[in-house]
Image 1 (tube, helix red, strand yellow):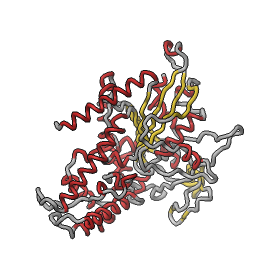
Image 2 (image 1 turned 90 degrees about the horizontal axis):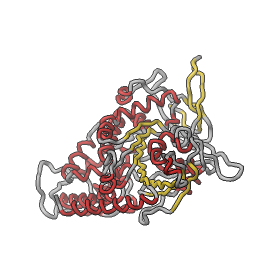
Image 3 (image 1 turned 135 degrees about the vertical axis):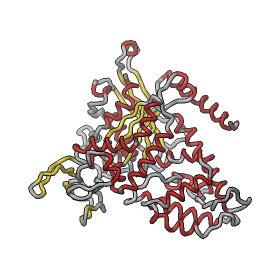
Image 4 (image 1 turned 60 degrees about the horizontal axis):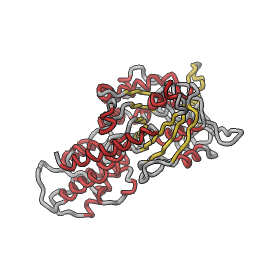
Length: 485
């Protein structure tokens, strides 16, 4: 084992011991919030914080339902070099006139929320009210998909990326990049212009594959899609090359330059993310836009299944002991949330959960075997629709009612964002295996549109009422309920 590995392990242990010692004064839960682009991470965190600060009704969150949650407030975050989650800005977007969804997560950020509560334990009640810090760490799921790269050489990653680009659902998006790749000899002298051209074409392919209607998920390197402050750096200017059966390449060749940059990406981008943020998490929620994958068809669903497996395998999951808390903290509670449940009638919520459980079945079993508690939920952190009924040909259909975002379409209808519509989205199949294969209903292909946020409700004494939601309280109970007992 290289000495750098021992040094990193020692550093992790020392930091874990420091976190543990600080937790003896005021316990701290580090909650990771992740998901692929447009899965609702920013909305989830904003709604969670606002509901707790506003004292919202959360019937399945025991501490709140039992009146034991006394106060919730924000405090300065403990990590000075991590950007603060822009809670106030995102809340301002949601209560604007008209309301709008906040900008998506593009980099790691953090927010410390402190809860004051009355314990259920007699000896704790004698000490007065208790406090719990929740350090919410928001990071793009695309960065998480980079962790498997740590086990892959440049040659292995190149071959995998090329093979994936030729799969159904990717071939069209990858065509310009593959055409340019076919004109390049990896043994040619290193050329910055060639590297930039191939890198730009590869990134363009990844962006198109992620966009509707493809909605593909497994598209590492994640910083190619969300570069943050690394945009334009050499560590992000590389692309796969076809080795053509060769095992070695001359020094100074295009291959060796690309390989060097790939290794630099792992050393200076992926490993620090794992060491400084990911490896320190206690709890984790993964937000998954299952409906977008279903819209994208069979290839998108299969790709999401691969992504879920890779994400779950990255977690250092399992039950915690005193030893593991000191030297190697583990994620002992995981929530997998199928977001945008408000885009379906409640009759399909159980089916949505079953589809997600099917997608992540193997990875869930592995985490549970390690001792972690894993829960699957159909959830909407902010409910943008209400339920209703509509008649079609004498049949009463369960619908959802809301304001579709400007540019959303169903059939030949394009919405302008200013009118309320009742929409029948269709019914998810009772057999989740059918959803993974693609399916049609008797009313035609299911299509899920995006809605604008609900109109905010001002309070007479200032501020706004908490946002309506679906199962946000159940997610909170799974993630932190035990810590408030």
